[in-house]
Length: 289
Image 1 (tube, rainbow, N blue to C red):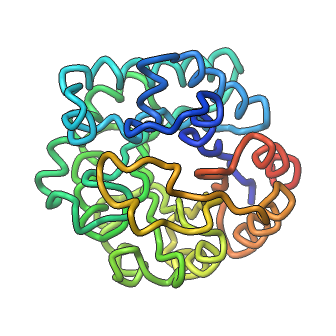
Image 2: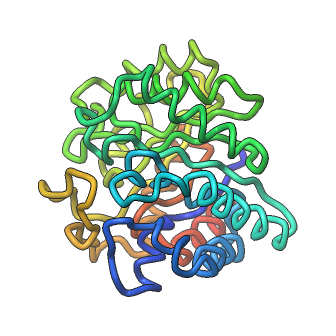
């Protein structure tokens, strides 16, 4: 079966270009130099990616509120979406996926609002993104309830709906909440999700999760991160990514070996997350595309 090649991580590529991690992470580039965002999208399309993921992972009400930027949410969402669309149009092919990041904080599902409250915020974001994107993708959903909140919102619009679950780095059979990853599957079927992916976990954990979710009958995808793990202090809004260290043993060839196994286990949508860059995607496209 043909493999859809996703792009790689946006945030860490932007940090590499700016040279300075900030508490706003990838949002900072939208404020300071949107051209960097466009450059990253272009780099991934040139590497062989078929999907551009909007730089909206952190363009969320709670993230912006903590920096007195709440009134700029719609502006930043539209700017990020337009940059992805422009890159896709310049490339001449591909799709745009509108990113919905986790509310509360990444990897910390206990800090997330309840599904009904989260859905309200996501619904407002989807209403903005729908003018630009082909797909809504809820990223780094670390509990069943987090996924539920995103699905409640995304399913109300006439777009493809993808949900990317993040699993425990030490046990890929479990979400970061501790719930078995397979416990999310009935929810995905209930809302008619078009794909379920595993993202922003170490590749070894992704390799455990993919065979488990591949039994669901829902199209499956994978995009791992290149971190050594998640630092205990990276747990609240304001924490900066310099707490997270990149692995030194995950060059493009090593990453492609993991991806080849994911494909063998049933994944048909494969890309990269944090610390997985254009060179990794280029090799994936060469070997899997």
